[in-house]
Image 1 (cartoon, chains in turn cyan, purple):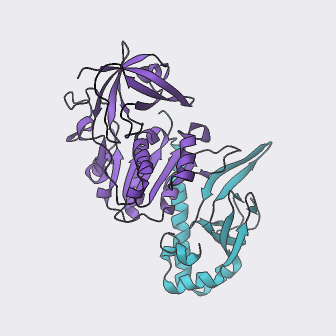
Image 2 (tube, one colour):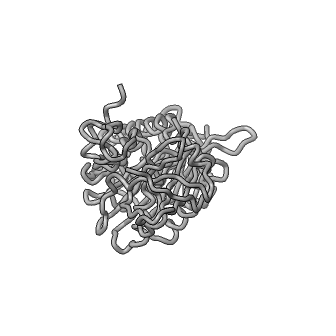
Image 3 (tube, rainbow over the protein chains, first blue to last red):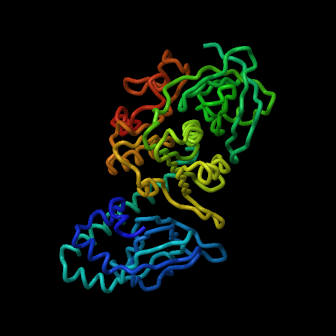
Length: 151
Length: 269
């Protein structure tokens, strides 16, 4: 799938008007990952962000003497990476491909620069990031409730 | 109202606390013909009676199948039954899932909530050509607590059903999604105002999923939920399962979300 295919169902892309959607398309490059490939590592510089166009990515945290713990997965149409926009621009998780994955990749510095010269895009990007952060916080809280337990 | 004797003729241990029992009538009575979504009252002699959703194949009414999780005295005893043991059965009772033939069908289940929707999925699998897109989104606590694992694989690979599974906590060998079901619902591309969505699981999960579907543009009339309340008689006489103006045992357990949405938002005081 490409960004055009995803536009109707991705809550991120659906927020963009035609002009900014075209800008997104122009700024994106395709990236393919094989199963188990690591995309970025916890605490590295967050110099890119991504939209998953096919496959499943895992966000995980390394643990001493144990396999990494997956905290969340992100699938087709979802935004991967919020830290590129939030100081100090360091990844909070490690991202690994759980299937063969195709991504639309964006250069963070370039996007930040574009946002600085386009207040409307800047506002949209903050709105998108705030929405994603809010949704993920809600999902994490629901997970904490252990709904499928016997309680 | 009199329970009929049924003998346990098959048992499959699904997880550490959940079993699937196959029951066969031990009298000369008719087979239990049911609509997916209905339940029976199962009586363990000398222990008590509980409502159990039917989780078997609607095209095989001679075989009554229940998937039971051990959560109390009666269900603990049911889970310990072995082939040859006898229980009493009344029913089937209650309303069933809607007819989704000639429409897209999306099933969203959480935990033990997969059991009450299994008959609906089995019917869709057996009559696949009568449905448009069919999807299942299933959430569980961990990989070891997934129900019907072989069947899930069969539906995914052999029945043209879009099966997506997520767990709250994956392990080192888990290669699927981790997290709640709502992002997976978000990924389903064929959700329209014509889709029929059925949701079965913990009530909080059903509320969150129903709201997600509404945000995607689905009409609440096309979203169905199965409620669990304290059902005793099963036939609307005792009032134990009263839920506002409804009795869950006769007016439900399956309700259109539009009918119960407001009441679901009111928690226990």
